[in-house]
Image (cartoon, rainbow, N blue to C red; front, side, top):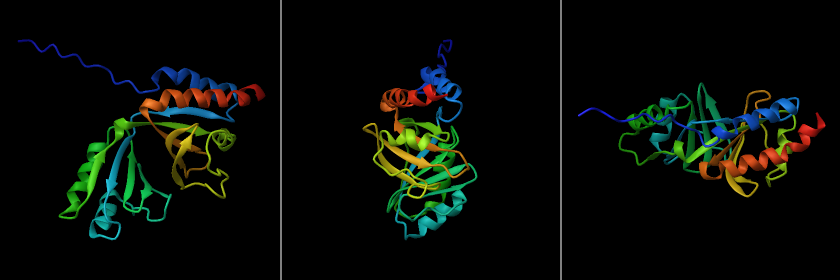
Length: 203
């Protein structure tokens, strides 16, 4: 019997909004830049921060797990976000989640850990440009001034009432990652586009 399986191209939650996001970047003169970073690998990790597995996992990933609340550690293509005293989110390039999982499980030994691929749960919006903190402040309760939420910081918070994980990127001018559940991505994108309208009018 002939194989009739058809490969369906993968579609990101915000594929239909790409042109509108790019238009903000173009018409604001770059003071606000919006884009989706689709399909990033996201692996949730739970373990005892004081146990042997923490050091072993850190070595396997090429970094030390962040132990200070709401901080980020980055090494190479991997970024690890502190989510709680025994919980982290490992973020990597698209389609690397299986490799990340394998590297963690290979060194866990008999230690009690939980490793969960949550890549399909969220998408990521990149919000950057000189007015990015001001734009996000319209709907986020956090103080986003660099002194309070500077590069290398992260937080589980709300943006326009949607639950998000917000990350202040550590590269110069890199702005913020907004990790949002796929089911809320369209709503949040519409909110960001509406909030960015004032910057488009200024250009």
